[in-house]
Image 1: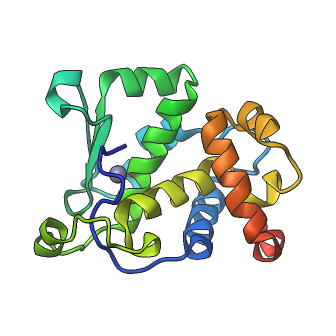
Image 2 (image 1 turned 90 degrees about the vertical axis):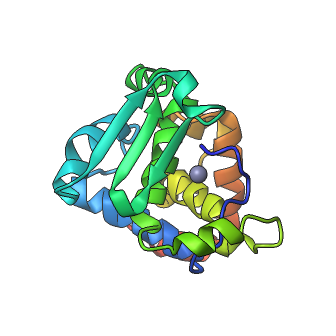
Length: 187
Ligand SMILES: [Zn+2]
């Protein structure tokens, strides 16, 4: 995840929009929500099928400064810290979420003008127009399928879907607010 909390201004998307996009990914790979989402396999084997020119780099920590990962949506490039990639392979919850977050940037933020990207990094961006909020909301929905977590506690979600307790609490709270449309979603 990037160090900026707010990121840059991007075209608005609601949590429901982003959840639907995540569910489209679930359908694409035949994921049923009965186990943790296979984010490493998705990164390694599915993204190259979605983008002919998909490019990934696993880099040493010093190359990314204080970031865990970064994405260039227009170049279809995701760069990850080596420890994040290795962590995700081992099922580490934070690392899995980091990859899902970068996948969110890749799938959601192609074509965001560079000039806008440079100028808009500020806390005044509403959440639904923030690149970071959108990537987090997408990642949450990708790793914690809405229709499967509605009746679970955050601890159960954390355990069942290999996500951090913090991420599980955030997602459960967000989903509770959208219970009606969540119940209507199917995997
Ligand atoms: Zn980010």
